[in-house]
Image 1: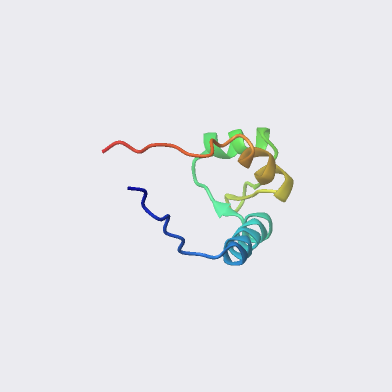
Image 2 (image 1 turned 90 degrees about the vertical axis):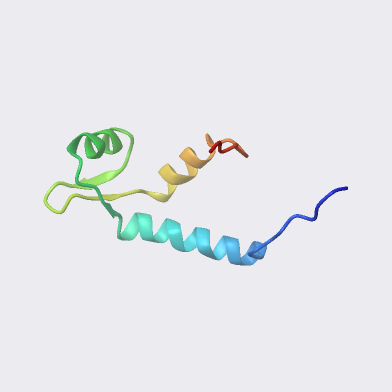
Amino acid sequence: MKLKKLEVFSKDELESIHSASLELLNDVGIKIDAQDTRDLLKENGATVDEDTHFVKFPESLVKDKLKTVPDSFILYG
């Protein structure tokens, strides 16, 4: 017996979420307090504000890194 795949979001909804995520990562960024993590991200193309500890991720960087993620993975408990 084959089970039907559950789809929570439509393709358009997923694209909208993805676009909004890219915009937030590029325009607002994420506050990262760990200096070694900020250094690593900066070395790999992110923009770091050392005063506020916010790291911004250009859209091109995010898209390039997403290409390296496997299509699926298994979580073990």
